[in-house]
Amino acid sequence: MKNFEHNKSPLKSKLRNNELSIGSWLTIPHQGVVEILGTSGFEWLTIDIEHSAINIETVQNLIGHIQGNHMEALVRVSKNDEVIIKRVMDAGANGIIVPMVKNAEEAREAVSYVKYPPIGKRGVGLSRAQHYGVSFESYKQWVQEESIVIVQVEHIDAVNNLREILDVEGVDGIIVGPYDLSASMSKPGMFDDDDVKEVLNRIDKITLEKNKPLGFHVIDSNHAKIIEKVDKGYSFLAFSLDFFFLGDKARDEMKSLKSKLSQKK
Picture 1 (cartoon, one colour):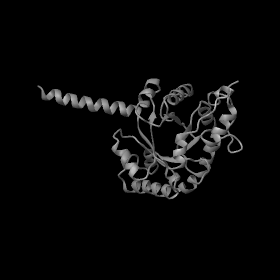
Picture 2 (tube, helix red, strand yellow):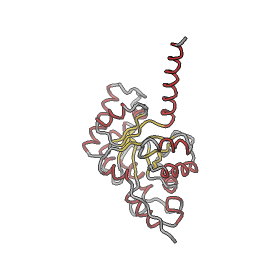
Picture 3 (cartoon, rainbow, N blue to C red):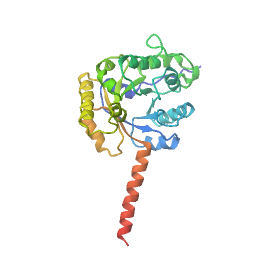
Picture 4 (cartoon, rainbow, N blue to C red):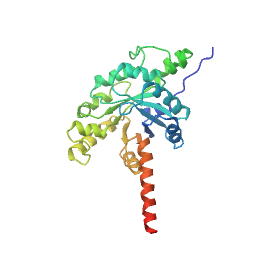
């Protein structure tokens, strides 16, 4: 029986070395969307199952399409849950983004749900990730060394415990969730508020001091916001998301078209 080897992760290497990596966010569960984004130069796509209607069967199909289009597939899971994470990883994800991690213990739990014993406590099953049983030994080594765990810092408790979270073995980096973070301060979406700005700056300072990958999901589809984050030391960046790219371009072009047509009258 042929043994299929698992490839090393370019994204994992970049996270280890704190090198810039840019991906995007997927909420529209269609092969065509993946293929279109795949022509854009993204290194990875995150399938969002926290704030979308995407189910686990669709997750597996999307993972295959993402990887088949020469990108790595991350999944932002709905919660820090052993069963959810196990199923996503068995579907073949390169890694996970875990929402609402507030302390080091929760970060350790997330890592343990991804890794097999003795590092973690993930249950062993045979599915797409293990090439349906053909290459379990290869996958066993891969998941311990190459799988990716990113925790979301999106609560004030996480900021207060950030140093301890960053010290957890197996956490590859963080990604800031600014909306929930500001909401946890009773200031949802108030990014110009002095207290919110101070907390965001504190995250930057601590993470960079620890020499850990600093991540952010820039919702705006204008690349200028990405440049701003790169200049501040961010290296793991999600650039907008599928429906913003689609909607912003359509609205901008229609606005310009209507303006030009009105001038002809």
